[in-house]
Amino acid sequence: MPETQASNLALWGWSLYLVCSSWSPRLATVTSCNELPSPSSQRKAKMLVLLASIFVVHIATVIMLFVSTIANVWVVSDLRAESVGLWKNCTIGGCGDNLSYAGEDALKAVQAFMILSIIFSVISLVVFVFQLFTMEKGNRFFLSGATLLVCWLCVMVGASIYTHHYANSSKNGYEKSHHGYSFILTWICFCFSFIVGILYLVLRKK
Image (cartoon, rainbow, N blue to C red; front, side, top):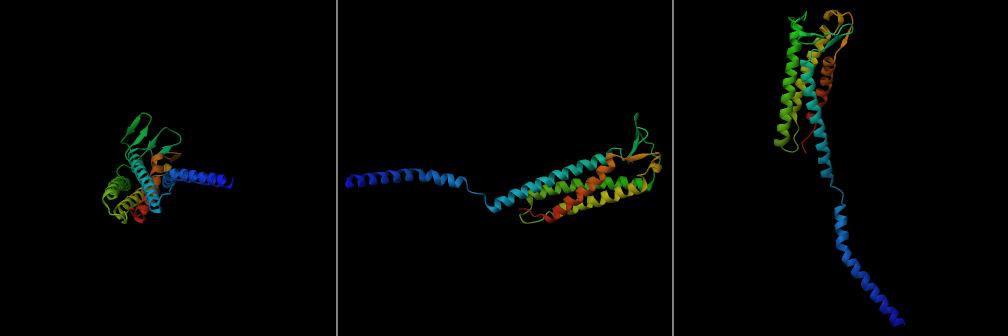
């Protein structure tokens, strides 16, 4: 009996060894598949997400600058279906070149600064895409950030001049009025261009 038990134990041990040996490569494969990503790959993924978010905000800023500059909805009348912008006075029947202050230097300055802001925002976007594919790792997006901050200055000057001279009821001939979406979009672009410009100066390409 003891010899039989010993042989059974030996046979059981040998069978267990064979099973473990056959499953060990599979276990190793499963373990390797479940390994966590390295810290460097995690940082790269976070950087890609951040750059993509900044790129989307930059594109949105360019689009909003186009809309705010072109659309004549800077001030809207509360009593009539009328609005004024940088170029025309609009009613239900259409828009006409009948701005009472069309020839004033202040309005021309606002027009010029808003056009410059569009130009610099587009240049900054193109430069950012170019640097993204050509710039060496570890460098900062200085040129993109500096160009966008120039755009921010243009927006600030243009919007400030318009706010001081024309964003009121008496100047536009309206008894009651409120700011239109073009005026609001301009100040949103003012905030976005500053934030994105600073981020360009701070971030390094990974």
